[in-house]
Image (spheres, protein in one colour):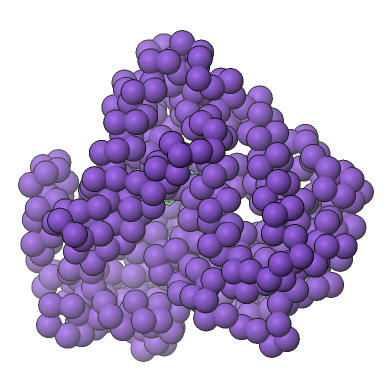
Amino acid sequence: MNAHAALIRENPHWKPWPAGSTLDHIPGEDGLPVVGVTLEQLKDPADFTERMVAKHGKVYRVNSFGGRQVALIGPEANELVLMDRNKIFSSEQGWGPVLWRVFPRGLMLMDFDHHRMDRKTLSVAFKPEPMRAYADSLNDGIAERIESWSGTTFQFYPAIKQLTLDLAATSFLGIPLGPEAKKLNQAFFDMVRASIGVVRKPWPFTAMGRGVKGRKYVIDYLARMVPDRREGGKHSNGDDMFTKICQARDENDELLSVEAIVDHMNFMLLAAHDTITSSITSLVWQLGKNPEWQDRLREEMLSVAGAGERISHNALGELKLTEYAFKEALRMVPPVPGIPRRALADFEFGGYHIPAGTQIGINPSYTHHMAEYWPEPEKFDPMRFEPEQVRERHKYAWVPFSGGAHMCLGLHFAYMQAKIFFHHLLTTHRIEVAEGYEPDWQLWPIPRPKDGLTITLKPL
Ligand code: HEM
């Protein structure tokens, strides 16, 4: 575990990984020397999990991504790990091997008391008043971009990815679109690439090398802006998330340090970007395949605001069917298909003893397709999210936003952006996809259609 050893040297408070042999009693597979089962797992993660569960059950061991780890499958496992009643599952050390080098000290890379305190401080940026201001800026940016797509056939995934990044420049950072935003976007793009790169050391000409350079650029840029934003933001109108975080005060009435602000903001951009892109793409795909749902959502939207008109933050709560449809898209293709943790103490699950230090993972993607909770799991059926059906289901059978202490802080932002986007799209256009079109999805680390998802937007 060389990569792990280097991380522990830089983070001496992390628990050492236990010797692989301490997991011998758990059924599973070691695969090939060095790479283990990593390649098979990456090739088709859904198929791989299905095969493993069928052969070994809902607790199994794999040797992948640099060492042995244990998968815990199903809603009960999700509840145990996410609720973490005994405070034994570390998110920092679970995500650390993937994210620490380019996105250190973001909320997901913190645990327990320190995490709780920073999370409370950051939550001011998601209160109703700032959310109303973000909604205004999203309405403008989205309406303009949809206009530019009108009547064309194009690859939706790269287009929505660019739009989400551009919207983040204005609503998150309060900077206008232009050369500066473009440079920041490129640096940020390099960082995201690095976090999923195979080479984990920042050598020149590798994704990690570019990512670490990108990180330096973003961090320096944000740090330079903090003093101005603390004083009310001469260079922005003060309505952006970055300004709110610069001015946020903790439980002791202290401002966050410049380093903390910059690390949190940097992580926030990561947490928001590919997840929103992925989920809006999968709903566009489902609506393309199920045009009757376009009609149902359009009717609902037009009862709330006129075609192509601004929809206010207050009116978004009325878009019930739209919310069910978005939830169903998040069920079918969860943007975060697996959630890692590290066990800080021994624990028992499914009749197995799992030792302290073990890297574990729960699997929202598999849980979201378990037929005992989701009859006909491959069918797009938003009505699964009507309150009566929700009440009858296991609470942890649907976990696209995780749960417990680390539940997504930006989930209301995600609903808001999705609802505003689909309001503008569906009240002015019809989404068309070719008959029988089924794009191939790359499911890991964040799902995306490999061909970019070709759609046509027909003006109504
Ligand atoms: C559909 C879109 C999104 C999905 C599916 C999603 C999913 C998730 C998941 C699964 C986690 C927790 C992972 C864990 O428990 O280890 C998480 C955490 C987080 N998300 Fe989101 N997210 C989305 C959008 C956003 C947006 C738009 C923002 C910011 C505006 C955001 C900010 C965060 C933050 C700050 C955390 C860390 C919370 C903590 O550790 O306390 N997310 N998200």
